[in-house]
Each structure stands twice: as C-alpha cells, then as structure tokens.
Length: 322
Picture (spheres, rainbow, N blue to C red):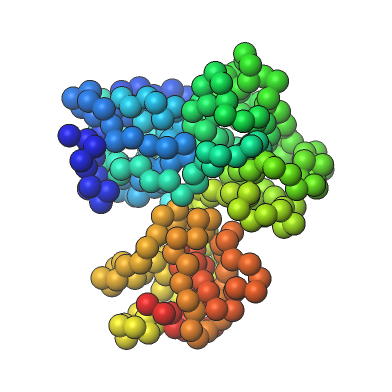
C-alpha cells in the first residue's frame, strides 16, 4: 500500500514512540497504523509533516534507511519560531496521527565517494546520522564527523556517537556560546582532497564552510539547511513578481517566499529542499535586482539567476522566465 503513495498525498502516520534527546530536542518514531513497510528513503532524505497546529515543516530522517517499518525525526523546539516545532512538542503524543509526505532527498549521499567529511552544527546532525547508520559495519569509504554544539546538555545523540567504533571517528566540540571558543575548521578544509564534504547546521556555520571550500570542486561540497523558506530580515519589504511566460503578476509579502506566493496564485515550479541549498528551483532572472539568500549560486551567476525558494528582491519588481 505505502509504496504506491503519491508524493503529493500525505500519509497518516502514527506516533509509536517519543524520546527527549535534550531539553529542547525530541525524537518521534512514526509508522503506518497497520505496521506495513513505509516507502523507502535514501540517506540524507527528509519528509514534510503537518504539525498539529497546521504548519508545514521539513525534517530530516535520522534512522537507518534499512528500517522500513519506521521513520525517525528529531524536532528542536524553537520558542521564538512560528509555532510548528512548539506544536510538535506540545500537542503530538504517542498514539497521535501526523500527516507525512513521501520522503524526498535534496542532500543525497554520494555513493562513489572515496572519503566523507561530515560537519554538523546542532540539530544539523540528523541527516548525518542517517548517512552514518547506512554504512553499517563495513563503511564504503573512510569517514569523519565534526559535531559542533553549544554544550554537552544540548548535544543530541552524544552517547551513541561516542560509543563503540564511532568514538574514534567523531569529534564533538562545545563552544559554550563563546565565538572565541569555536572550532577552527580551516586545517580540515585548507587543502582540497578526495573527500566529499557534507555540512548541515546554522547558517553562519554553512557560510563559513562555503567560504573555506571555495577552492574545492563544487561537486564535492554539499549543504543542507533547516531554514525552510528563508528567515525574515528586519529590512524585508513586499515586492512584485511578474512571470514573463504567462504574464501573471502578484505581490510577494514579507514572510513568504516567491515560490509560496506563486503557489497561492495557482502557479508552481520545480523545487525540493525549499531552503536554498539544492538548486532545484534555479530560475532565470530577466529584470530586477535579487536579494540572494541561497547557498548555490556563484557570484557570476547572480545577475541572471535566482533561487525562488528563499531569495527576495532589492528592487520593487522582478521579472522571471516562468
């Protein structure tokens, strides 16, 4: 039954277990009510869920893809957020039902890599766990994980990562909220090598890793973001978007992405991560000045292209080749 589920049709999954990983991170085990196998997923995949308050959120799957009977997600409670994570923590209990999409993967693990370097910040550990767990007892290539957190108390999955064979491959670093105590990643990234680098975490961490890997082959550096749809900045303003091919024109308000506004007006475009890291929604920019907020475009591409899932406008209007 489940393997035939259409990607746009939510599956009603049952919460079979919850577990507090830290004071503000909770894991949820989700399964089909009849206990049959779920649609398969690959390491790095995510699902979209509809929180009890109606908010749509994306969460990486952190269990082994071989576990077909369950999906496991870890949700960090964001007290200053829009309420989705608060609702998940407050209202979702064992036995409850959660509408869930079929898994998608905007952060796939490169199967032929000769080495892997994982760099995770905070809740960004979740897709890395799926990748590492998929290796089993005989990894396909050497790997190392750098896991950056504020303190031992905020470090999810610490006991698992520091036990057994993983202990020698995992470095956990706490900065205790002091930028001066941040781990220097430059020695790891100074010299490009055969490794594929995977980075997931807060935007400042990803920006730093992107800057330090500018001289690497772009195909060897991969990013995933939990900043769905882009964060609101104090100077954000509404702007107008015109779709050149259809002639449709509409306003993009503060707090919504171009892609979200398009959908509300009956238009759509290819997308996947919706956080500016995968490049699926790359669109030709015909007129106007973009406010780029993605992790994909190179400097010489920014005048003529835009990622419509996160980027906005510096000008009053953008004209897109859609």
